[in-house]
Length: 266
Image (cartoon, rainbow, N blue to C red):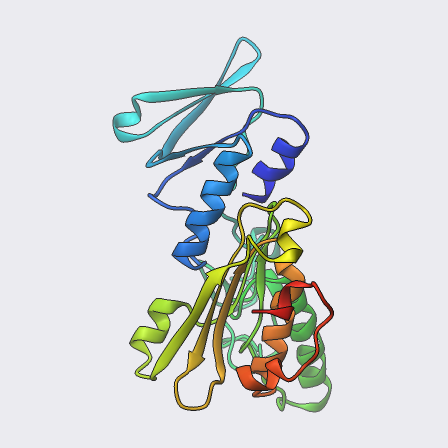
């Protein structure tokens, strides 16, 4: 989706071939659907249920074949495969070093140490642990170095790490999604609403803007926050901070936020 929005902003005609019936399954479905709507409004075409099976060159263009029975085709000047990524471990010959790997990377214990070879530690995208984000890799690097030098004492904390899709506007989240809250056994409530009529949205003509915050029923602690709109990637850090240090929604409301920024009314 990020590639699609960059290309569209540069003036390209963009088509997203989505294998499933929705985009961004690791993000809140309601907000992801709003992003799909905003994408279409910007001129991006999204085709759902299209599973690519083959890409071929034809007279200077690319032809993507897919869908049921591989019976549909889309012609394009450029094809970007964003179906996922794998850790680049083949050249390291980790098997020779007695290092076990999974489909997601090197298998490690809670100290980021290989479960088979105690001389090996793994972090970041080659580590089968934690979200694959730059800030997480930085944190893991510091902990792994500490454990190598001083013995296994440090354990990474993966709670309350925000994630952002840098589209226009961006989509951001931290903590639980609604379905996770429903299966957690905790009593919770949801604050949700549109931000499109807020001054921070109206001054830039923003049509698509929505928020959803999941709160503990008893104490008002923030269990999850989901934002879609201008500056969501910055605003989500406030909720991550609140979750990290146990601040409630009432604590946040005591802050006199700069007006008319997004956190002013969420």
